[in-house]
Image 1 (cartoon, helix red, strand yellow):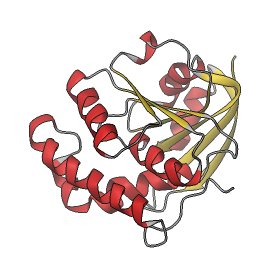
Image 2 (cartoon, one colour; image 1 turned 180 degrees about the vertical axis):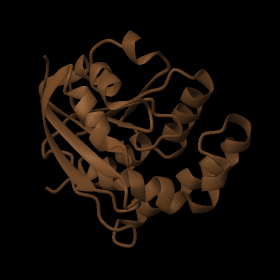
Image 3 (cartoon, rainbow, N blue to C red; image 1 turned 90 degrees about the horizontal axis):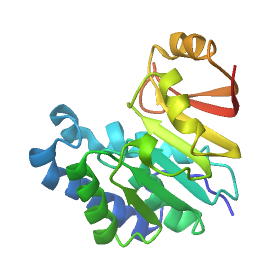
Length: 206
């Protein structure tokens, strides 16, 4: 069984419908709680959905728990859960979001999209009990050294971290290596020529 995402035109009708309904929910809620920037609403597909789908491509086969930090409007966490329902039905997805209004959106979206593989934590990342996750992800949340610190306590011993990072990722990597050791792979983003997906494993404190 592959856990890799497929192009939007090739996913099942149920998955495609869920992704479309997620975009509708974002548009409905965004004026009240600013889930995504107003300027990106007209291009939700590329700026947020496809950007999140590509992260799922790097999930290890057999992963059972995925913990998304600072989930906000559900990117990549909700998209991961939607894809997992089709491609990795045993994968449980944690969404951690300290903003109570955004957490309420995530809970509503999970219910309306019929996603039973989601747990929403309306808490600070530091206050959530360690999750023992096979994968921890984050998007546009914090500098890399901070992300690694937040992720470390939630990762299983052999877990990996997947972070979407922009043009400053080389500088952030150099800074993070002052406090942490890790193996890193870089994958070019499909939606931004300056961005990458960083896949980190073997994370340990210096």
